Image (cartoon, rainbow, N blue to C red; front, top):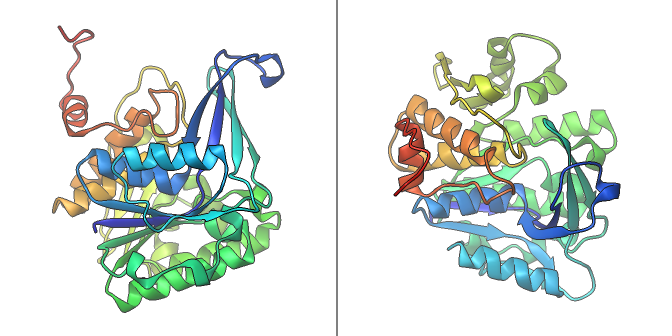
Length: 318
């Protein structure tokens, strides 16, 4: 197995028109979750990925499992909860460059993941374990499950990749969020923070200074997302390099771009790329994800990715 991810995925309802959600009358049903987005992105690029979670024994859970399995992701370690629902969220395309997200995930099946449900066999054969700061924010039992996953990874030489993905509405308490996010970062081999997340954790500073704070926690590799500016990478010797981003004329849906970046970076590393080359693939994946409505719908296969990265500008393929 190349990459294992663990975390909640929810049923996503997207309005079929722009404007305030109160005026929406029809919706499209999709699925979204940071960890499953990464697993799908990797699978589309030909890598072996596994997603671990807990979902409800309901129609939404059935549809979700079918969709993610259909994308080639291993879902054999997903468990079902007959008493708790699959989480739901809504997107609102209020106006251009103003996308909002509303979550209905309290007491969801995923929030009731426990360490007892996690099997060592689910992680021990993986090259990478991808985790985010969303999972420990869901519940105390999720934190224990994540701690167990990290322990299994370390025992088996699996590299740990951590995306802070800070959701203050889930944490509630900012100091608690800082404490847990820095704790999980310190246990990771690679961290993929956004600039605003690094500022939340460490205060103001240049991207280079903020990257150093992660190294001080013991993180070997830091790849900081800088939006349209690309990313800043810093390796074992703290040699920092800015990797230019890809131009996107119109952002359709920014949600999921960070997950696409993570998938691109991991794909590059699995292909034997340097950190700079992997970051460039991550930048391209992140840019492509913003051009399509949906969390996972814009994730490309290798052919589409190559066309985009090579600057193909043909508007129509005949």
